[in-house]
Image (tube, rainbow, N blue to C red; front, side):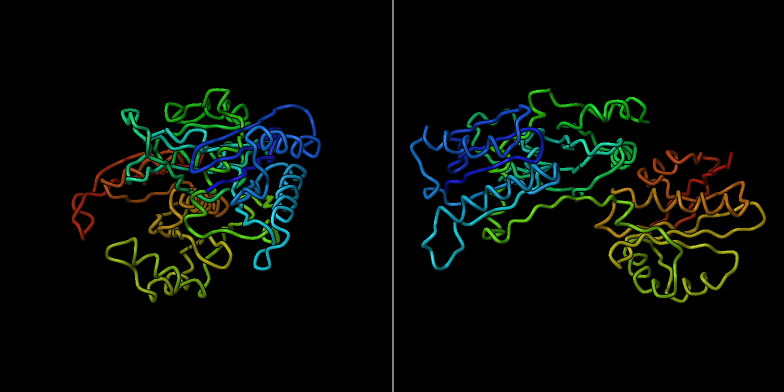
Length: 398
């Protein structure tokens, strides 16, 4: 299997030919030249060096974003042209098969030996924001990363995405990663943007930065990522290659709002999968009819990703429910829901908010502490199924 990889999402221009996982040739430049000037000559040169032609390629792989709008358009157009020109007489295909790859995933492959450490590729999106993803690497035998003791070095590490590619303010990204709680290494041209936020974070020891020479996007990463997609049958033709600019932020895609009766069926399903014993749909309906209750949801594309609720009396409130859909956890949804309640409480004159959390729920306790809650007591055997103590926590509005 021979793959031509093309990377042009940022200032770097890079092309490579990979055959059965081995890089036969790679050409990378990090100069202030437009990709329209560099990509085709680079491709021509490396093919000449290895005495191959575009027609010898089995697949054309290209990074489709996020990144520079102009760079992505040039890279995708170049891939389309080569794919169409390499097999003009094939009646079944519109040129050579093509593979679309996330530029962030391709960048993550620079650190495929990270082991248990998560890889967070970051690209500067300007105005204090970064394009970002979060990946762990799993080898072909199912273990995390590739061990340094693997002398034969025969295992291939596959990137597994832990959150979808997005664009976030740097502080929001740090908050999401702290909520995840696992060690993270940053890589990419957004590293310098992240340094200040890491220094100001609650847990700076969680974060590390890749060496400068591993922050450059490379076409070999595009080709490596494309091998996984080829295995999965995620191949297209030239017409199917389209840039993905990723211009919407998480806040634009996700909406925090008051819960409505139309949300109850989705909320009840999340409750049943998350809480024991769960509230019924009637209990949520009764809560919405109660003037002292305030319940909110996080919605994305019409789907409820999480919910939270509290009851208010005079200048105090108690948070009774916080739950996030399993496939949306560790993405900042829970933090956003609780922050929404705190802000709503402040607007309603609430001075003190309390809640209970299972003693063994370390992630939940860490989340609440990060938002300013403190432990003020223990309620013995408060929870059932299983029986467990509750930590009573308190938040006081300043």
